[in-house]
Image 1: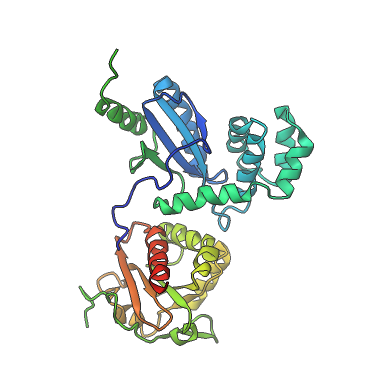
Image 2: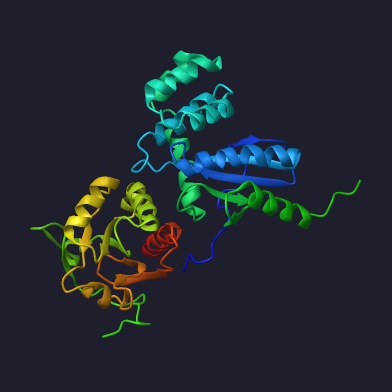
Length: 186
Length: 161
């Protein structure tokens, strides 16, 4: 009955997820993150470099883990990313939210949305009516069930990554996993 | 009196306690009869690991309540420290003060560290009848998360059916 050592992804990566990279990639990297968490913003910068270096070998997945008591705008930001996703603009909004972490109030978010060539009326309606709150909660609960206890938390091919979130450590960990995967028959 | 190696195990009746919530309000375990209690011992207000841990539990209150469970947290901090901490982190469950005699309730549950003078980072789930159904002690610097709590609550629910 102990939760000690439990460190695997409870909800496998699937079609509901936001994915960046090739679906044929050998490695899947899942992040549970919060747009208002400073450590997640730092991780965002690290990831840009790591994913850049490892090219098509890694599929990156982002799931929401907003802690609203500590980060009052985190849920709204997560719902905004989902509202953008429903118009095919998830990653664009994702980047904007991290880059503007200090201004994630609803008016600022609406302003960011105007730069993304979306149906703004629909975006705002979805945001105000919390159309995507259930989805954000599902992400959050899947994290809780995977033992996520804070942000950011990473899983490499379903196994929790406990190392430092630096370009070096993360790249090494991903390359280490790559080495264990037998190369496909040509 | 040392508490080493005596963390209360499942099946044990939860020892009674009554602790201060504020200068003039006390909370007793008896107040929760008929509900489950997730009893959270933690080392100190404002230390980085427990902040995340308690923020996570605060976020999960609606989930816990679906299982008729409430969160009660205990540390050796004073009511004034708790007050500031709860306000700062917007924690809406009670933070009780195991302050005088220091650590008395933590000792009853076997989770007081004599050497450091803090409570362990420990979790207990107490059922509606006041029996401990699950206990877990985490390394002090590790946030134990909530998957163990939710798993236990689910198991207790399925036993009932």
